[in-house]
Length: 344
Ligand code: SF4
Image (cartoon, rainbow, N blue to C red; front, side, top):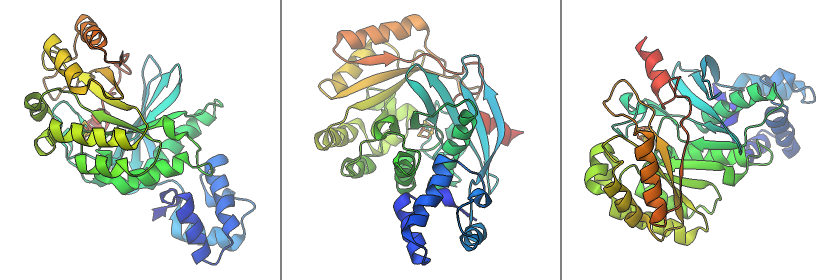
């Protein structure tokens, strides 16, 4: 059965009108879902009985249940959810000084095949619906509600390539951003792509304020094609061309994600090449320590190398941050917890 979370506010208003309900019913129902955060339609006490019956016979509220939860020493919390068809998806809650950020899964498995990624070990089974992404956020927000806390940021950086599920991802962003939905600021929502150039060009024209992050991870075609097969279809020249179009059409700053892999992409020469590649762009680099997975041989760079890489970028005029490692003592790399459960 379809989840009610699949509807954006505009779509839900249309649906209500098509069913001969008054428009304001959409407002009331969304308030129950997203402000009071009820988990059943029966809790909507000011909604008429026949409307509740219609909702109950056509929709569920949440399509997922929590099946596992790991909390690390730094309070990073990894959730494993089961969807109604039995598929497993993960979300990771991270605590920063600027707020609480949830990393959301957009596909069941992923076909992009990045060599360092635990999610890539499980091929794509299907896309998540927008409601299945909304439900991940709602489940975690419900837990935060117990302590009177609020999710401030959402990143679509879990399992899956968001732009390979473009419409559902945009619908999801719309719902969590909408003031009738969760009202998370557009500038606090980040879509991360490994570089699907055609979709970056499409996104450039959406006229939305969501952040765009690029999983770059290598500054040369030779290395990028080795560790990220997407580069064989969309090489760096095409990628940079699309990103420059995006920057021209949107007054937004880009983020480049760069996972530091020991002896693979963390040398001084690579730092200089990276600086040359992106110099002059309105962008900054987020250097990320690698969360090691058992299944491949990649190791995380040591702190000294990571600091040197950071210094070289800064000296070459590139703004960057070196992110602290999160959830090192749990299966925090995307896809790890799910892969473990699917093997068992
Ligand atoms: S890093 Fe992202 S795009 Fe690449 S395989 Fe993993 S989930 Fe897919």
